[in-house]
Amino acid sequence: MKVGFIGIGSMGWPMAAHLAKAGHAVTVFDLDAARTASFVREHAAAAAANIGEVGGEREIIITMLPTGADVRAVLMETDGGLAGRLGPGTLVVDMSSSEPVGTRELGAELAAHDIVLIDAPVSGGVLGAEAATLTIMIGGENEDAIGRATPVLEAMGGNLFRTGPLGSGHAMKALNNYVFAAGFTAAAEAMLVGEKFGLDPATMIDIINVSTGRNFNTEHSIKDHVLPGTFAFGFGLSLMAKDVGIAGDLAKQIGVDAPVATLIQDLWRDALAAEGADQDFTAAYRHWKKTR
Image 1 (cartoon, rainbow, N blue to C red):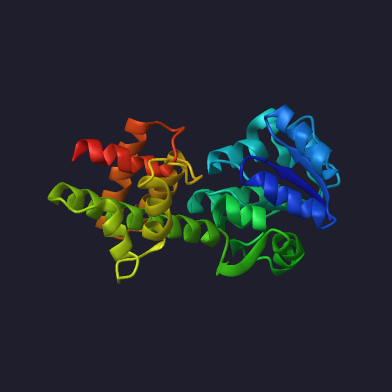
Image 2: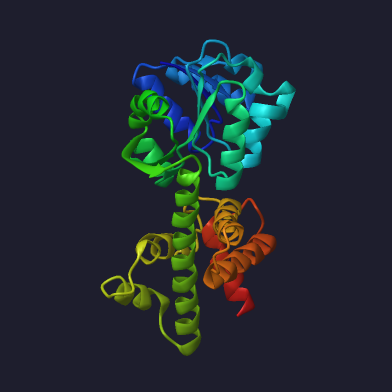
């Protein structure tokens, strides 16, 4: 297929590379022109000099951007918006971590241009992107569009799930990352309490990881990145705070009382303010250790 891929950051690069290896005609665009040029050299892809050039005869446009606001800007605002340059029936697949309500609003706006939007955010991190084993959560009502997107998504992921109507994929992604963040928060708190009492952190993790308290964070995030002091899991603190915020805001928007989500949201916002947006999410532990 003729695929336009917008955003070749740490996740987007390997994802777009898998599409090129699968034989799709990939045209990439990124604000980092040097990175775009490197990708084109390595993967025999084409480069778009600007957002408008991503349009044309592309059958599918994939966005892999930091926020839903960035996705909206690319499609509806920047240089007049890409939407006006896409042919009728073009499919846009937003694989970013966007706000579910905003996704539904954007879908309605794109429909006015005869463009179909589906959301297909991912989980699995950079390693999953590199191995093409990402979990992909697909939201949308247009069965034909999802059918067209499936071969492209299968080139990037190992687990494809239909989650429901448009926006449901983004809701699922945010809720998954909320659970992920909550697990890290609880594990970090237990470590800090135990260390203050006199327990050895390494021994604590070894015990937890063969006991009922084990989870992904105790087995990987804390064991591999907090205890050694590297704080280099590969997922940004700003992104974690954003995703937790999306989950907390979603609860409020639909009138669900979610006090734990509100607390977790506040804790991660504090950590982000203290440590900075360029830090790894595991650096939140460093902040919490200073303040407790």
